[in-house]
Image 1 (cartoon, rainbow, N blue to C red):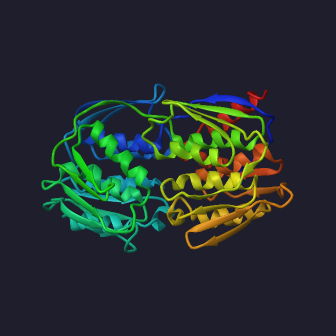
Image 2 (cartoon, helix red, strand yellow):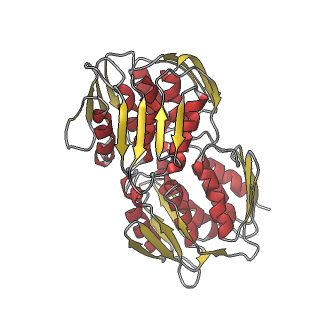
Image 3 (cartoon, rainbow, N blue to C red):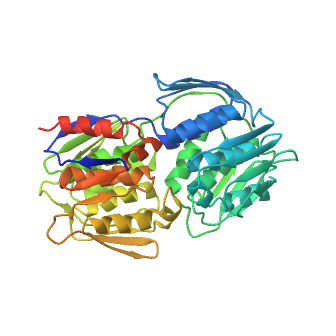
Length: 436
């Protein structure tokens, strides 16, 4: 197995602009495909998850011009569902792609099969399928109920829309998938959340804000517990994709981890559409110096030289759990990360993976329900270890942060970062060259 040793770095002063947001890229591609007219998307992320989406949209008959060197995609929308009458889509392990496109295919006039790699067949999609069927879709599981592969039969009346009660879901991507196709339902969509909370609400807000950018019409009430999407059509837009706030977190975390360091992430600030842009607040609570501008975020290592352990609810930004868990190994005192149960149905079971890999380094990890508490090694040192990444990009990137601060961290299968951040280790080398 390929492996890379992460060497500790000296204090650094680094400015970086990371590639475009995967979440925004894949949402913008879907909305542009649905829209009337030609949309030009710039700052597009080119990585495994977005290439899967691009290939699938072309397979569904949409007209795309891809200019990867200039990070640009031109989409000539078809004013609604897929032009292709039939398609077989291989969506790899891209959760956004299979969930968004399952809903999109319901707007077509044909039969569409959606599948992915072996891990995808263990990632639940039943809550989304059930909701789509309640709104008029016809979807069949081709193997195990509740999981891909799926066949969407859009020969009948298709999505009609109407009222839908939705409890707490395993993934906010289910909600986003429903919302993005809702303008094309003849009756629109009246979505009522009946559970205790909305899973990963910042991602739902991101979707709604981007829909508004493409001239989708909606109203929200009672702190988004009721959302009404009006029937209509998206209109083509020129749209610049923000840098990825989730992937930016590793560089901000690196500044937190290495005493005397500073990092500025460009293009992500207080007006970002991404909820993960608020991760810097967690670093502030751990003792870092944090300044957030409209379009940039600055983090400085704690003046004391050590991070503080904290207790934090990350239900709204679960992709930050691994980054915070790894910083917890370097902190004084335990850190508790609460309400992140949906980590179990990501690229891997991230709670189980964190529990095993952090223990290799000498940390104590206790999982109670959907919460995990990390207690760092008593002497502040780690046990050298090779970290397994489980084909999960965030495991590789998060654990590399520990290696920047402590000797002995090796990352197995580092190429898994290609899922969302192919140039990650190249930028890490640039950070190393910025040492003071």
